[in-house]
Image 1 (tube, rainbow, N blue to C red):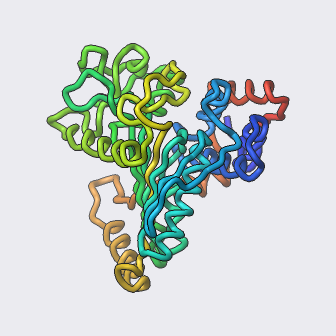
Image 2: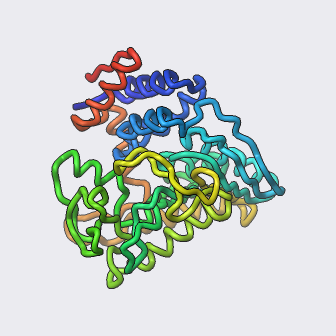
Length: 359
């Protein structure tokens, strides 16, 4: 099933407006979600819309937040998201980071008391038009085991870095610190498929291929899958993201990060901090060297890697290339939606008395 990008975005705006978001916040939140679908990151697109509504239903989402700075220095800030949509709070944090970088050379913002912020790359790349390098990371509910653990203590904890170039499109690395994001499991669940090796383990800590492993007491694995393939490195990346997003910000951290509306549970349990946290940053290129020199060198870097000799039948890509090319295609031809996602969107349309049409 295909959906027109702009019609789908308008529908998502209508849903966010229906639960009380301002027009501006609804527009921004919808853009984050539908942009994920356009870029092929379907696990973080409109498939998550019903989850945000469930957060609202359970009293965990404030649709009219008073987002404010709790503490700051010339180059840093701590932001209180007031239980708002992370889809709105994170762009505000990046805006502050860029403002501070414009003055101090770099700007870093830790966020507490927020919610799920969508794809990290959306926020990181907002720094690029200002000739800055953007950073965005967030922790998430504990679905991931540290290497050798049977306990779930970390989230998928993604990191995104966006770097401007002169004539070439920006470099954008956006990846989870796990073998796969939880949303990919949801897609496999909807399709009735097993997972590849190295994604999940069962409740006893044994490798398995069950897409429902987490709901059956198992866990996601860190990037690398097992110790022999470097899972300790994925564990280390996830830990760094959790500490910067949670411990540094005063949000919850580790096993106490509140759940999103997935994995079959909704209520936040014991807490050690304030809501969900993020960490965003901006680095002004000319705080290090002349901007034009750097941008030209980035073009050279990108072109050299892109023309690297590849194995037969393959092509070397730059981080961000696949998503950028797919975005052009999907905005032109439409966004494919799985039947369960269509069913969720149709249910929201019925609840809020909205039109939901697919081309």
